[in-house]
Length: 358
Image 1 (cartoon, rainbow, N blue to C red):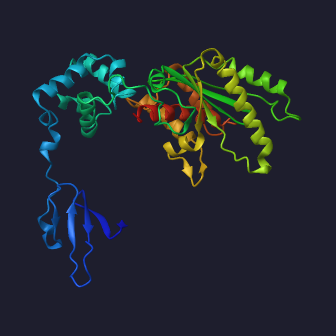
Image 2: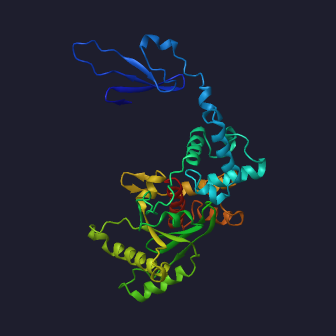
Image 3: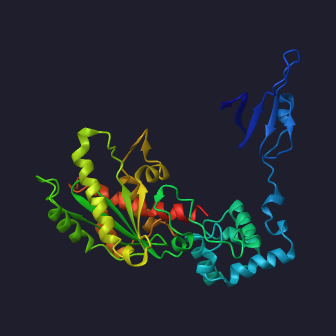
């Protein structure tokens, strides 16, 4: 690479930086090697043969040695006694990590040292250090007024953080020209229900409100109950007049879903229907090509394979329904299930946005 006179390369498995400092024109330029691994400083190119970055930094691997006996005892007390819900309230322990800690305790007994956290799935050295710091120095000050959750800038409207963190399950909803698809997923990323409703009455002649009410009400009656309903925000620009009929159709469905799914808003004033920007989900899963989002079918199929082959998959599918889901997405199937794929990806992205943005 080359950034403002700095070039990077790999030496014996470690990345080093070749840096040419900015000096007056009258001064002879020198080149240095700055090793980002051993952090010993600058080396002249002639000394390159003396570098040996393959020697591990044993001090960096000794997690327990980074803390006093009192600090280690405080962290271990939390890890060994806190419930899963209490662990989920700690920075970086939300989602699957808190479940993995509880499962480890149940199978192997309490943690005897901090180093043993490396045996827990999803925990690496850097993650453990940050978790310990969060336990020893909680960021939430007592008595501090609850603020809106600002980390999810692409999810609207704003919702109080404590409501989002208390979520047990969500229903992710994606709709298109003919279909309304949904994925009911709990906080462990277990798929509870995954389906779609098809209608051939949309966009037939005039946009009759009665037709839309009948069709959308039919779909809503089959959508499970959940703490929140997450709708995909249509990304078609209103500036494109050629797509105005499609835009009107999508906006109509969006508005009616908000009204039908969020009917309790008039009673308690709490939003239960949220909108997610489609491109934000695409960027999260690296499905963007320029400004356009590509299909997520292959990624969803991989989720289903991992659910069977991996001990700790990213998404969990019930065994009794997995075969039916896999047949739905086989090649040659006339119903490609794009809306269903998008609904599931949106649900996974929502939880990962939530638990990875403390």
